[in-house]
Image (tube, rainbow, N blue to C red):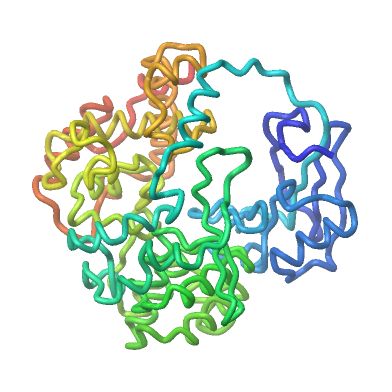
Length: 460
């Protein structure tokens, strides 16, 4: 049985309604089968993956499963694939849980024949031979830079620098990395299989966002403690960023920063909605008032690690992003640290004059998502290479991303979202004027609403 979803011969799978009992959906090129898996109710992600391997020889990378968090409809439950890779942020695991779908598996031999242009092999070779720090430390390599810039969220966003950074930074992660890790056949191999034999902790990660959420934001300065938190989230099927941030909110409310045993207990309680875990499972936006802490979220999504109070274009990006405070929507932080060549970087101070670049970044990231292009490929993917890979003019390709962003905003508008929701829990210079500038570049109204004419033009 092949391992790639494309080998089923399908482009997408749509779930309509919900099952009467817990099921697994086996999607193959010769049909779809539904299996009653009520015996897997409450099973962790590894337990679920092991069942399919033992019963059918289905590998972890042929599965998309939820853990107890998804079954219990935790607002930030993830869909897990390859056992440790999360479709996190936004609660997709809760969606499957609401439909009583424990797992989806894929297989077949019906993938389409695709002519791969020579430029792809050029990119592959460059990625394979590049001596890049992310190959050793992943995204957590940026933590020291963020801390030096006074831009590392700490103690539930109340501080922006962490005195214990050396215990959770890139060097700390690299010391625990024991082999290469990669997505599919990627030559860059920036994943982080980590292990601490003394304490018996093994996981993949943590990446920068998780090292912030369960590290500096929770007052924890031991990378192995963060690794264990990361592993628990993977086991239960939880988005580690939102879980860590929500727990940090509770730690602030209880004056318990740094209490690792409490943190691990709370992860389990959230996954099972037990006691205080039921409140925390609703996320910061819904739980902050009960906890008596500030609401560090945008459109219901809590903040990522890249500090918008310092990287102020990234702060604007958090505000306008259709997903809320998600750093990957435009990856604008990359041009403000900068992580790109200096000539392509921007001064992190200020919000005005950045909307044209922000619109371009949002369109590009939407294109990358729809084209399955890694967002960390920025060092290798020039406009010319996009054109070679997709056989289209780069501006035309960006227009695909533009249509996606516009339709997402229209979807939100139809549900009552407007300028009032493009807000932040902190002040940025010229913020309201920057919103006007952004809407003008998008061709939206000053209230942040997509005109009917714009919707019609992108749906033709």
